[in-house]
Image (cartoon, rainbow, N blue to C red):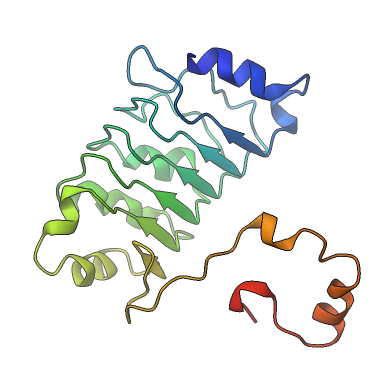
Length: 186
């Protein structure tokens, strides 16, 4: 299914400005660029385009509220400066399984001041000598690279589904009782 058609289906009678999460995994692109996604998706916080044949981010619209972008298993080899311009509030970026070969390719991500989690697993750049040290130096805002922090401690794994049902009886304890949030975050 092509990306335009998938976006139409995912809208489910909503307007683009009502959508906060959009999963377009395994769609097909005709020219290797994002198709059908516009800046009308102004509330979008999560976008997943895994394995869609993406080779360029040139058509990416302005998505100011986007925090998490999954772009793994595509053919991206450069052009990451578009992310800083179009998605300035990204906190999580997954570029694993792309064609990123050197540190200079990821250097534009330095402009993403809120970027805390970057995944480049299965990209050639990860094979460079002193890769982790150089990446943390290049992108000092990062907390996690490829799922681990500077001290090789694994990132906590939790997501929105982990919190279902919290607001009934547990939320009062967590907020009022000084308890820890799930996932080890205090």
